[in-house]
Length: 613
Ligand code: AGP
Image (cartoon, rainbow, N blue to C red; front, side):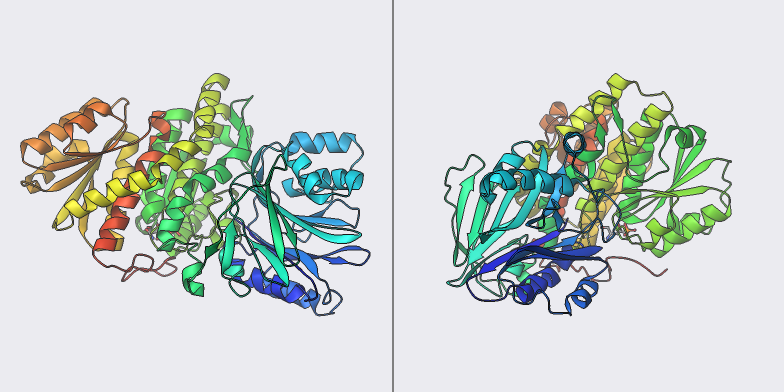
């Protein structure tokens, strides 16, 4: 996730609005930032690693104060570490053009090779610079920035929100969207673009959201919309009546709901530029995941807390099943105080959204003191967990504001799947074809995730929440790789609606807990076709035989038919089913909390990052 801003004006300097826009968007990423502004003889770029204050110090000299057009960017690093060189804006080296980008150019390596063959030299590791050169070469040819951007994007595969500023005779600012959001607005004097309406509100509350495939040309006092073929398009002008806090939710009632809806994008941003389709393998940025390192691993020990632990339990199923490596999983808060007997060549896998959870950090440090190799799946590039890891797989969920974790969980599970495939391929346990099959299915998952964050599924989950709003307590049951999904669903409901909910291994119910089932008690059962599906169906029968009210979430037709209520989920490979099954559970918990009038984004007694014991 990154923040993008842009502005062009008849007579008002734009530097201050650009910087203020970046300040407002820093929540979207803050490991580096920069601006590019149009001057009489070209485009001036200033960019700095670190927070916005570092950039402001560079701008103190006032050299850019008079510019009437420009763009800005605050970065959440994906390709290439946070550094001045990798910070946006990127240029084509001509001095007349600069570009900022949020998203992934999936085929950037191929495009980079073509450009290198054409004699282009690169100054960064980023995919964005590749796009900058493509646009620059077209712009040099035609002098028409919108046409240059369209031509460049026609060669691009991936997801992007991109803005470009160029000068030839006049200032030209153009932006385009395919995936990550972009919104534009205008006053009589100027026009503006941003990743989030929050940055436009100080200038105008009349805004237009670009849709996928749209291109906007900004002019002082207005903008023109077209598609990638250059045909004009019409988009509604919306009036934003939110206050600043409200606006940061992008039109959603809560950060949590917005983050649930960001899951299709963040799944793509975490997975897609790491997939080696031909090899049926995965490539992680940063070292430590090479064949030799992974062939040495004798055991994996997962340490995490809460939702991250549930992702870790899913990781255990995946690593054992796909890579054939034994895995232990423990609460970090337990691991750190027991006397763990780790065998040599144990890889300790810490999973953490914030990267600052005290228990998880303590578990990592204990592991290292015992001679193990701590690695991590983490969402915050500058966090302590990342700094103390020998190897890291970053999740690209962007900042997660809602205390109840949703999009971070989905990206943690994606990262775990990628790791399991990498380990399976490194150890020869997974063939090229098996790797390709899994990664192809992962690549096809985004639209299925989108179908689950639809109004229809949301309404279904709201309906079932309303039907069960007076329940005293819930069970959430699952088996196999969907057992941790049941635990996650129970945790979501507990932490935002304060209703007692217990996640349980479905096969364990008969060993005592089934005594709690009474007529009408809601029991959510997660089930997808696979090796344990028929066993879960039996568990549904056992619950129904005692009057329990079964709510089935999943893609197993028989289970959905057996259940009293059902939320069907698109079919997918069993290994990927947790990524889909969890979404209705998130929405179910959300609507319960809504009905109970709870503070959904800041539930009582909780904190987003538990940095204390
Ligand atoms: C999840 O909804 C909770 N907010 C909590 O369990 C969280 O997952 C846990 O505290 C771990 O946090 P981390 O991922 O930042 O380490």
